[in-house]
Image 1 (cartoon, rainbow, N blue to C red):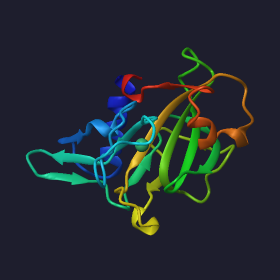
Image 2 (cartoon, rainbow, N blue to C red):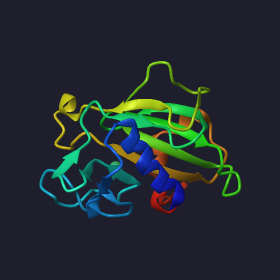
Image 3 (cartoon, rainbow, N blue to C red):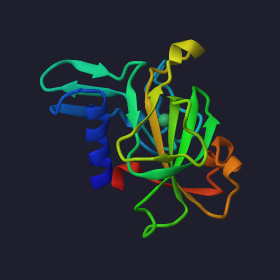
Image 4 (tube, rainbow, N blue to C red):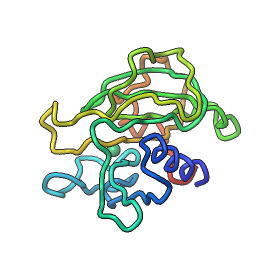
Length: 183
Ligand SMILES: [Zn+2]
């Protein structure tokens, strides 16, 4: 939980939201939930594979949200393993330091982004480094608002870097999902 809380603060700081920010999560934004938080608020086709960051409140002000220019920082120091497409924008797959005690096969997937041009497999990132902006979902006529999706995934077997993409991450038989809220 400590890392997750720190990441919420880093996300606020990267976007100069001040230190009175409270992040807000609808049930459908949380891992394993099957509700949509957009469009008709119906059911998702599959349970959510991570957590979505979009809404926040600054002090007593009304609810605001990440805009299409929102800056996305890296949670920790790490190594980029892959960069792949997702259904909205692009995803960055990062092995963060500090997870060796947990499993050497844990990767973090930051999704629905417009990733910095100079970042790709083999690039190192520092804690707090800006790795991307959120993807402008209006470019795909999506009813989803621009947001960051974060997944924490334990790989069950040695996987070629190119295969670290959403066809693997969405296959529950091949991976274990770790809830980012509790890291
Ligand atoms: Zn999501």
